[in-house]
Image (cartoon, rainbow, N blue to C red; front, side, top):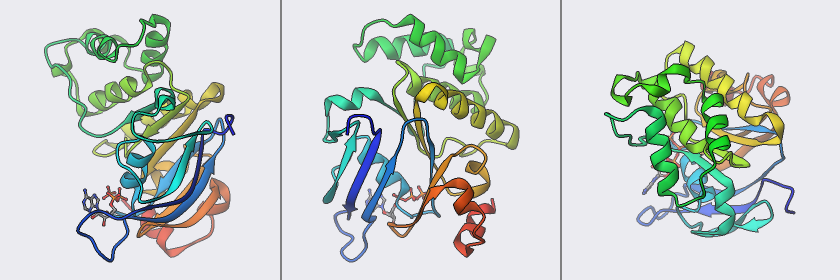
Length: 237
Ligand code: ATP
């Protein structure tokens, strides 16, 4: 269905060398337009593996991923509608934040889209700091610049792998605002976290994973209030 941002069925991945342990096993869920979906689970649950398969970076052993109705394979055209934040984006420290993003956008070979650039920058909320050299940025600002980079071109589906890693509580709150602003106007966000407390105020829906498997999926209010013991662990920083 071309109207559905993400539909996954039977997704399975086992890394070479790990004989009896699946990183992701028989995972299935859907994400609807306008949702902010939190992919929640402890370390090693398989969140990053799942997101990397969605981005077409690694190939599943079994199962299917459809983004706006199209099958994800490495280099699939529909990936141009997907923006992704992964840790460790590199920037040129002596250039301004804005210049870094302009350079990146031109390097992707896509047509100049200044309106999109401005909107992405505004959502990221870096304000006057965009004119300053990246070397003067705090970690939180670099993180937001990396997220602005993922938002360039205003992709219909934005995937953020642990965007609050290493941020302090005020920065985490700002990040929350960035995600909520992005999802407004019918765009869709998928964000991973190992802390329920970090995502429950941002997300409309949750998918909870443990050891590669899906434990729960549904609207955040239905899941966060269940008193589940795994969720209780995930709530603690
Ligand atoms: P974290 O929050 O620590 O990033 P995660 O939920 O993202 O955890 P994954 O990184 O997807 O989990 O890891 C799932 C499992 O796959 C873990 O057991 C991990 O050790 C294993 N794994 C991840 N990457 C590789 C790899 N490149 N080669 C072999 N095993 C891997």
